[in-house]
Amino acid sequence: MKYFLSPLRVFGQRLRRRWDFILLDVLVSGSAALAGANPVFSIILFVFSLVVIMLYGDVDGTEAPVVVQKASSTAPLSAEDVEGLLKATFAAIELPCLVFGADGTVAFQNAAAEKAFGVVTAGVHLSARWRSPGILDMVRETVGNGLPNQIEHSEVLPSERVFVVRVAPLALPQLKRRSALFVMTFRDISELRRLDRMRSDFVANASHELRTPLASLRGFIETLLGPARNDDKARERFLGIMLDQANRMSRLVDDLLSLSRLELKAHLAPDQKVALQPVLSHVRDSLSPLATELDLDLRLHLPEEPIEVTGDRDELIQVFENLIENACKYGQEGKEVDVFLRQTSEAVEVSIVDKGPGIPADDVPRLTERFYRVSVTDSRSKKGTGLGLAIVKHILTRHRARLIIRSEIGVGTDFTVRF
Image (cartoon, rainbow, N blue to C red; front, side, top):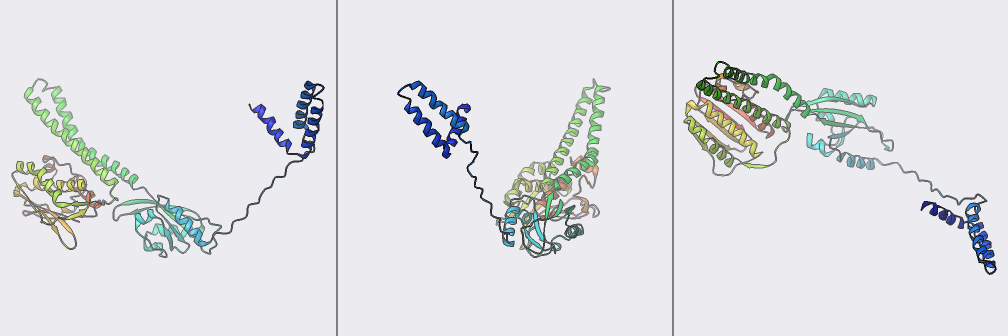
């Protein structure tokens, strides 16, 4: 089809020429004059005239002039226009970004930076928010030589976070202003660092904790395959011990997974309201069989007016289950465990008090360390993994709460959660 359309397009273009119209008029008139004498000859002459027009109608070589409109040059942007454009651009970026001048004063920040570090008022020097010598030295170096630079920066509060901080100049040739602008971005690599630390902790600690039950399982299996092959009584006893060791490894793996999940979202504070009375009642009901088995009295002391805190209900249940279960197991000698819920003008407190043997003062500061035990034998006999209080600490850190431990030998222990 294109072989027929192309000549027609050319023919249409030729008809626009002045000489094409004259030639067409002469040929068509001649064809019409000869039509009466010989119609076939007239048709042949007409077709021949069209071919001549398409091939030679543009013999003078003139082309229709092409009008090109020259683009008008844009006027330089004002400082206000450029600042508005920068704000709109950085607002769409997920990374926390700050724009500052050569003197180190903040021009503006995007929403991601405000969420990560709080509001940094325009006109305030960077050192008012970041006192890290590494960041300030990097800023001075980039301002001095105009070259991009980056460092790794750690923050401890409200939770441990690690950033790759990059500073680079903004090239704005259309901006008519005396002072240059620079942008500082923060890339959060906290999860990568946590994963690295989690792997090293697992190798150093979990492998040590798993070695004992694995050695026990291996020894009992070898015994069952060898000397106790036909001993039904020994096989029954060994299988019970092997089941306990397998359950211990399962609890250890579950606690490690729970701890790693908590670490990944430690910097994300919860935003839901949780009523504490129903949470504590739920925990008391779930631990009542354990209290009955240990022959102790588990009592709640709750005020009538509802008390709410900002938190995650499932994680708070995990906190109080851990603390109350520990009080029942390690304070069972006192036969009593009391749970108090109080609200003051400054804070909300939940205290779990037992009448057990107490904890030595030297051990209290280390109780929330992973795999730390006051008595390894006692902990393992009570099916502890050494990770319960570490999980409690991470959950409370995410909730911006504190764990306060008071203990006295021969009197008992008080674990208080303060929101």
